[in-house]
Amino acid sequence: MLMRRAGLNGILLPLLVLGVILLLIPLLGMAGYRLRLLSLIFMWVALAGCWNLMSGSTGYIDFGPVAYFGVGSYCTALFMLKGGFPFLLSVFMTGWICAALSLVIGLSTLRLQGAYFAIATFAAAEALKQVVLESDRVLGIDFFGGAHGLTLPSPPSGIFFYYVMLFFMGLVVSLTAVIQKSKLGYGLRAIKDAEQAAELTGVPALQIKIRAYILSSSLIGCIGGVEAYWLTYIIPDDVFNVMRTIQMVIMTLLGGMGTLLGPVIGATFFTLISEFFGAKFVYDYLIIVGLVIVVVILLMPQGIIGTLVKKRGKSSWLF
Image (tube, rainbow, N blue to C red; front, side):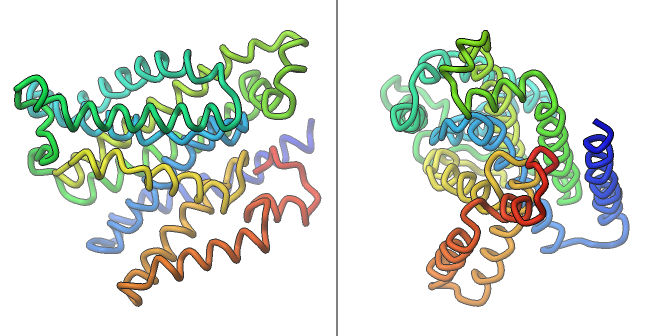
């Protein structure tokens, strides 16, 4: 127990120092592209962390989180445009709507396992995309904007979104750390190791999966709402794009699935190499990024953090 506490303190202290530094960065004069890049990294760390919170902990590969990202984007936009609500209140209400939606979807899909769960969540995301695309035409109204999307009010400065994205990144990482050492975290890992055996020992598997699924989905929805206001313009083909889900999966696998810092490392690494090669090789950077990812996964099949854990001989709970 003392070793675990010492290890936990050894992780929390550097994270706390890093958090203070990140809070001070805009005050020290950083602005423009660099500030936007950091904000983008924070967003993807939070999204990958949300996916890892559910899928990394249970082993249930979810291909539908973009559904909540898209719903969150549209809910926030509609609350602001149609309801006249302020941004922060719109994001808060968006989180509850995504929580309710994920409860409905989760009660159906989380009874499935393996490829069936992955296909069901992917289908749910595509179905929601079509609802947003076709509702205005079918009903003869102008609500979602159809394929043309919606334009939001002019946003505040980039510093505002820097701090909002930093908040969500810190929230996701903190929740993951707390959940890993909680009864919920132990239940999620038991489901990942042997779900049927866990149920036989009294673990309420479906209830635990739904709780993690709702928490993950509601946070993804909130982040989708923040990005919508940040970019000021949303269309279904973008906010419901399956590539967003694929990026969350890749980032988590690169860093280390089921670990605390895996999404942090993976999302940061992926975003930086994408930006670097995207600037150097405008037309071929996706090929280069893909090759880099393949090499990293071949050399470190357990992810960057997972490989470090294995080499240092420490248990993964620390990371």
